[in-house]
Amino acid sequence: MDLSERIQAVRAQIAAAAAEVGRDPSEITLEAATKTQDADTVRSAIQAGITVCGENRVQELCQKLDQFAYDGAAVHFIGHLQTNKINKVVGRVELIESVSSLKLLEGIEACAGKLERVQDILLEVNVAAEESKSGFAPQEVLAAAFLAAKMPHLRLRGLMAIPPVAQDVGGNRKFFHKMRELYVDIIQKMGDNSSTMTCLSMGMSRDYADAVREGATLVRVGTGLFGPRA
Image (cartoon, rainbow, N blue to C red; front, top):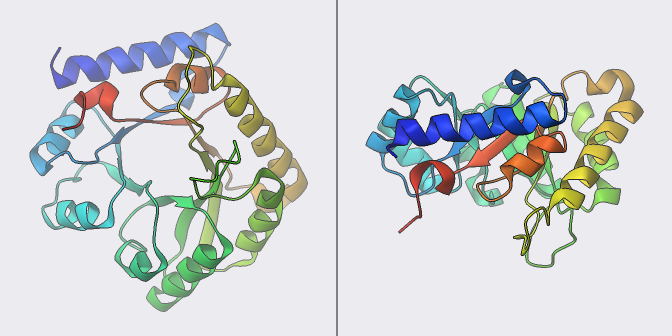
């Protein structure tokens, strides 16, 4: 299959998974994870119907922005963001999905304030308590959400998670289910402060269908669209 056919195939699987649980497929956004893809490939994906691109690395993001590779689509930052590179990302992407610590939260607020911008963010949750991954522990997220809501230059849009690589089919559904419960609980507890929280970003190439079944509103697919990375 070519790129356009793979995009159609992924969209069809998203629609099928949504239908299984009575969801409207239009509620779910397919985000192309464009790590290691060149500008021409990104342009081709957008021409084939991709509306959101997610970039993992700051250097790649900046290069592709300079090449106008994302024209016609929104661009998100989905990788680990170091505090010394915040100024290269804030104000240049529609959404930073990987806000994983209070230090990063405060740094983004300060940078956005200097730019007189409001930056949309997601809070990253280390849902499986993996030592190798960053992110807020589930029990820490509510306090971080309330803090973010008080920051004038941030707009909290929701939560993001990267569960472990599942060894078995359906192995990550328990983590996706836990994320959905956490997401709903935070929205209820934040009341009026939760009005912008409409995004639950979870699921990648191996497990996005299960993420959709458990309530994801955005799935991040790379290999499933572009094939294995070199």
